[in-house]
Length: 184
Image 1 (cartoon, rainbow, N blue to C red):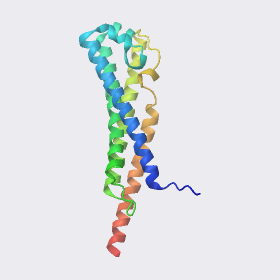
Image 2: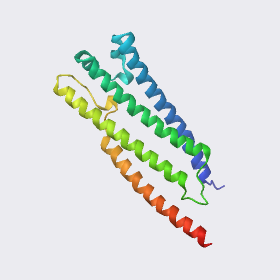
Image 3: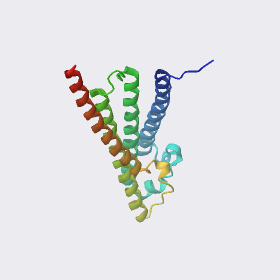
């Protein structure tokens, strides 16, 4: 008995994984938004129970405006990640991947959007980590940038550049493919 793993099987598994990651990222973004709202407007002691145990009590005690800025950056990063996986989910669900003509405008636009989102995540991650470094110099104790999801900006920038290069390759492939269609 031979087991054949086809492209459609792989795409179904990727769709399932994308759903799981997307739901997780939406929960993360929602939790950060709700925790920030509760801390700022309802119960300031809720800062002790911030998302995933992020210890930002010292920042809140130092200045609530600094806490608000940091929380806002964390929200932007979480929402951008969720949007990124929403786009992947949308591409896989709508089945706009045409394997008979792999170079198409939908794929180019998709990868270009992912590139912009990666750049945005990298930018806000870098700004957030630099803000935390500045807060540390002001006397705030920040246990870990990893618990705040403010690490890896260089990876996001690297991913954005790679996706831009792939977008240009696909753009050239679209041109060549349309020339070949005209010749036939």
